[in-house]
Image (cartoon, rainbow, N blue to C red; front, top):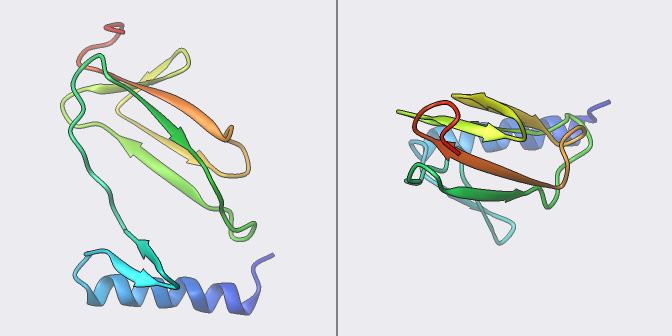
Length: 102
């Protein structure tokens, strides 16, 4: 169950990120970003490590590809949502231009 303090913190982040025009903000000596993009070539593999998260509300991360697909284990898709309470702490993500390329 989410407590009032955590709800207020999430509302604060939303407000601050909106006021920044979606640019990264600083909070408690850490950088908070609403979105992180980078170029990955077909055949590239990225290892995602989930370092920490709050228990409530459950946090997640959305991974998506433009102009290609992602592979996690034996599944191919343009996007995945990974939830901190269900995902392993380390996940290999492959970048595919077409299904079955990796």
